[in-house]
Length: 203
Image 1 (cartoon, rainbow, N blue to C red):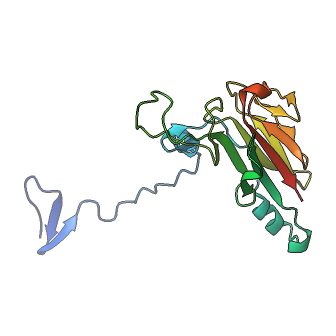
Image 2: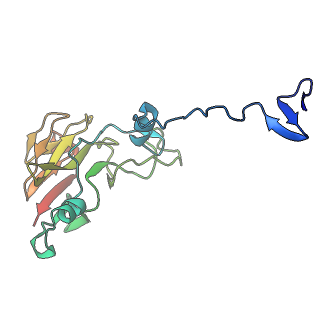
Image 3: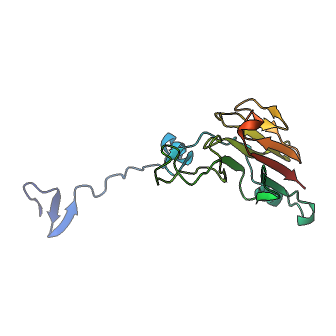
């Protein structure tokens, strides 16, 4: 005997509890693989701040390029960025450009520019920080790209306040300029506004 209790979603057949959903066709929920604009927005952030530079689709790190193309260690080009400061003999820092497809160079004073008397720490977004007030927080970037199966480094000014110079010539903002070994980069269009020079090496 089948009995349905009042207000119940289940029926009982000979004392056996049956769900009203028993035997019903299950609705299949398919996954959605469409890129989320929210996730894309988050991927362009660092330390909760929106980044200026969005990498191109052909971006690749030297590490991955050498791995993908099976380049022997003896044949690999070594990329470096060396920082010099006027009045100081020798280099301030040297960074090997290898693990990342893009390196952002920008201001890193260790303190906030809002108040000279404040102990508030500055949010540093740069991979290679420069301790100079005239340098923008995200001043320029060195972007590696694979073009026609070749690894090519580019310089791009990130709409900086004082501009970027390459070998004493101002470069246009937001445009890729190919870098060559021994190129000298300045973080201002006026050499009197900066105490720093950066040497790009590909050896």
